Length: 318
Image (cartoon, rainbow, N blue to C red; front, side, top):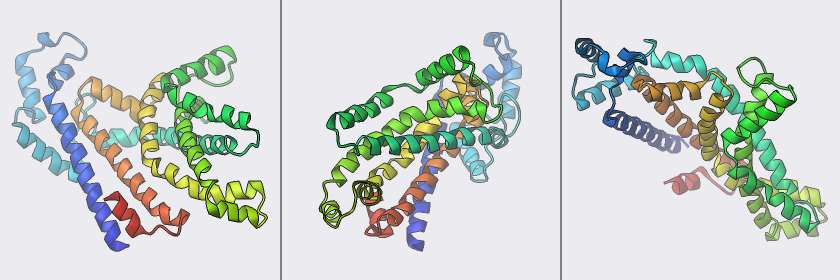
């Protein structure tokens, strides 16, 4: 167990380093000048005094070579110090911590709703005896996957805010303001979960041990929910990391559509202004989320299926 955790920790550190290095290389290779963007404040960049630009580049260390900047940034990143924002002057880590609760609320609500909808739709599409009902319900997940998050968000705002005035269209005020963004975020994600889980359920229901359970007198609901659903959920659990990634990327769009303050809007603003410290901090934070989610997912495998050991999980991950 200890060896497994140490190996996964080493893999996680490598992922974080790779994400940091790749993001730094991409930002360094961008043709535009972040200092010129900052100094112009939305005006004409060519009108900014060259002496002022030189002073700002020296102040932020951008006049040094790329390797020197990279090593200095990497040393500070190890201490979770990504520097100060070019736009606000506040520490990049503090900017993320200020908006993180809003994004975590939205992501957690979206994930919970997506799991409930996805599992419910998967069970509903495999449980009925009538074949046409199963086929009709099974056609919903592909439709949900094809719906863009921004389109779902706009439709929800149009119907529930503008037409029926039931829920607020924008802002972060209270639980009511969280409903529509969470639904918009959950619809495509729940469709992905339902599609994968339904396929696994249909396969699991043909296994010999299911026939044995039926022969012993287990009812249809007990066989479906107690015997089949638990084992069929393993493939869906495998894609949990991808699902979380979808939710994080979807949060960027959702927070923009619903004008919510959060990590997504902070990222969009930082990318538009080439606020490198903030972008680097967001990239490392996102990679850290993926690493933690992947580790938690691996640790859950043996709990769902005792035949799977951490050693097998580690071998398959390698």
